[in-house]
Length: 321
Image (cartoon, rainbow, N blue to C red; front, side, top):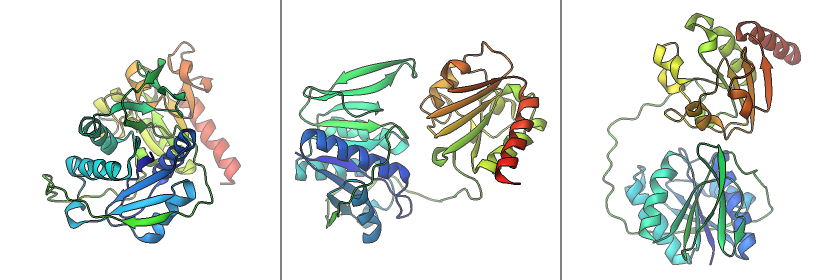
């Protein structure tokens, strides 16, 4: 009766989100009086796999086969389900990211398991098994009871602190019989020289309050000073002021950085839905009634064109630049 956690890797390396998942799974396992087991799919060396033990995994199952070099949701689902059945896992934890959102529902169907999607805290109870999650784009919260024997949970990004332990994970290699993946990758183009929004700890985002694309340099300068990614609201990307891959919100990228600057963004429901999981939101807007202030921990009422240069200057002074 273990807790199984799927740890995604990127070119053979784990990121912070994987360690967050293992930390979460380890604490769920403690609540259930059992152990956390991590499953890794793909070519990851033993030293990297061992790292998962630092965050609570007692065992790491490595599945590395040529047929699994390319992420194929059906094939990966089959692997995770097979591992879960072999070890008798009652709870399966995956990330609430793009790959997790495609794998988790398939796992739910395959294992006849209830699905708790976008969970943001430890279970409220393990008997009955009750998970806590945001609802209505973060406007409400829900306690969801999962009644099936096996449960699948997707953990919202940046919703659980990483907890380091002194556990020494054992590594077990496993071969799993799966059908040949149906997905074929013809070409790979990797973005370089720019911090990805989904990986960023800090994001500086601008809205229509910036008034034009010509006024964007302070946003970029502040992001550079803070080692942050840049983002924008949908109207900005629709106007062509910024590229569409920077659009955050319900119809764009859903992110959860530690710190999110909303500069000249009013805070429409669709935008809030994409950034409300941020740990801290700093809003700058000249309208004191703007909805963004309802979700922001810190707010500055003022013209973004005047406030932002002062903020940049203050950061430069702190950093001695």
